[in-house]
Length: 639
Image (cartoon, rainbow, N blue to C red):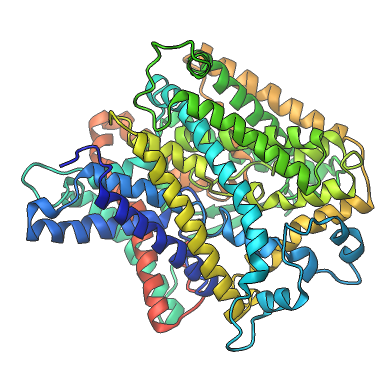
């Protein structure tokens, strides 16, 4: 048997699972409006399906015949395809892609004047324009009409070219950085530890060791019971609802401090070093204090609205901090980057890249070619060259920075402090972009705006999973198959649902609030041109300076208590919401290590893995129940 894990059956099962995710997730999050299973790096749909596969299907196959069962490497290949698939169907791409494309036409009104301000600057190949096609997409088509595929084919084709190039560049970048992060720095990659444990097997044993651990089942049962009771409450109100969130107000009632338990985040936080988990909740609390001081003093930088920039001063600091984070990562990886470049230009013949899923020349030149193609595409869409260069810089800095935070800090609920369009407008000013450039920039929010998951992060986790394999070239094709299959299937089911039920009757944010957001931003900037904003630039510089100081202290002094990763992370919306979950896991681990030592920490580890597994298993089960009984709005899990 092929022990590499890249077998025909692993690819077939991984493809089927990717197809299931592409069809099931948009249906459950769009039509059923139930628990979110694929909007974050937790990739809940992958964990649920992997549980079914490992603890259900694979055990049955082994009971029939030992040789029928999938080996651990095959199972993990399938899991990698599933986590890649989870980045596509909803918040990662499709639920922003399809509703945003035509939003400037459907949501145009005499009051917002989008017909005069925006529509003349939108290239014909970017979106469908037929009013009836758009009306039916958002409001539902008459019975028997179906999806007008002809109107969608051209824009989908041109967008697909760009998006495939984007995902290819992401994968190339992770190939280039893999050795540095995985082998040299030995990052923890907390998000891969659960599936790796689930896939392990004992010789001549059918059930994986994790599923024999009583503590794992205790954690599993705790989250399952809470989910079951809340699921029953949705249908039968005489069942009590177990609330896991509350808040208090501070700073003259101008700031609400939330207390929300996120069991998956508690599980992931338990796996990271205590100085890092301490810094995550410490800087989150510090951001609330900073917000409160600004609220009661009335301080503001008076900048026109930037998409997803909820706290301008704090978020601009985060942008500067992430720029420094990425530059420091690249500085630490300078030898690895030199090796990659030498191999790419044919000089590093002794440099070994046999373990990589792409050779270094392919990864390097593929990245360059992909970036050039993306730049040309953006220029053709109407963006000026200077804005294209700055936009691509900030977009990939944010992608790499967030990926680093995910891989090192296990922060599964995260997005950038702002979208890449924000620092472009703040730094260049909107005047230099002009109406056509701003309109083009609005479309970039489809793939670089409120994205809480993307291919780069899951690809990095996949590369960690396969670190012990000697031959990984087939992994690239596994990832690309997952991307293509999920793109096609999620686009298909989303269009079918929209034309059958009407997009505005599906998920409210994705089909109403979200699509309006980027074009409102562009229209405001066109009507009110602005120069570069000194306040924004100043706070970015302050954030960069603080991040450099924290990084310097962290690397120079062992006694320094603050990990620099907490600073750019603490001001991000999702982390601020679940700070108490991070605090609770930090406190438990701190006490465990202090009074029980590493042994007790290791013994309790399955308990926290069970919290993660139980949350997504019960959420997946209730989505199936909701589908069978026709229930909607039964959201057991959001973050």
